[in-house]
Amino acid sequence: MDDQGIMIEDRIKKLFDTCRSGGFQSFASEEAVKQGLILPVLQILGWNVFDINEVRPEYSSGRGRVDYALLLGSQPAVFLEAKNALATLSGEHQEQLLNYAFHEGVKLAVLTNGATWEFYLPLFSGNWQQRKVYTIDIEQQDIGETASIINNLLNKSAVSSQENQEYAKKLHQSRQRKARISDALPQAWRSLVEKPSDALISLLADETEAICGYKPDDGAVREYLTTASLLSGTSDVSATRAIARERGRRPGVPTGPSGTRARSVTLLGKRKEVNSWVGAIGFICQVMKDRHGQRFEETILSIRAPRTPLFSKNPSDLRAPSEIAGTGFYVENQQTAPKKRELCYRIVEVFGHRQSELQIDYH
Image (tube, rainbow, N blue to C red; front, top):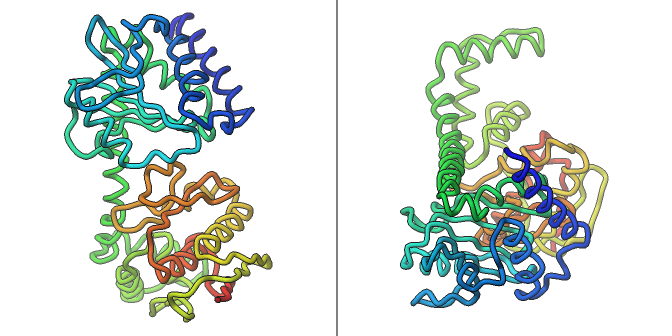
């Protein structure tokens, strides 16, 4: 990167750092987000925000209005849509913006509430999730990383030369690759345990011997892996730990009055009144974060429903996100009470604790 690029990113970092230090409460209106964040960022990136032939506010797309269009000549190259900092970026917002951009032939669309910036390739196929390039979270991510990505995607020079398109496509490919790997890993695990190779059996037998001093025969290992394959709906980490504790049977969630609300939760010597299942999940996550530190993020993200996440730092990844205080994560709230209750015990398992260490009292 040349000196000018470094200087641009340094200016963006200072702006984002100031916003993060002061909190995003001051951006409680769309106009505040526009004036305090979007326009300063665009100006740093080389756009003349005072020239409506370059940065056009309230651009009429023929199907509706977009907050800003970045123009090259008379043609829009980028659409930007702003929401207030308290707004959750729901699927309705993305679909509307991408619909406008697609019918105008705009190659890049941006949706932001100030703290979160989402970038899309509107002309790509698929739903809005499949057309997402990248999500920036100023409050959570490294400031230097966010500044670099915004510079590469929205710098006027990069947009004019279409270098931003090549960069966006690489980010999109990386995101798609990660999503496919995430979907394929559970299938790969099931395939391994349902039809274990001799190499896997030998490896597991050797590891068992290293831990306890006794080497199981092939039949015992195959029986163990067969039991593991029956633990559907759990991650490989959860399945392995659960079987290690209660070999030969699937550990069921302790019985309780299904469908009622959680009143309080006791875990690892800590107790809290919660009065809801989301509150119970949140408290359990807080205890796990305090106990496991750096392992928390990777482990909590391993807990998924089939094909959909249950936890994310980005609320737009979830259908009905509820914030988990003190963790930087959101949990999917669009679940039945029994499913939320089951999730409580599943979290405890994934982090390597016994179900009996969790006690839930009910209303």
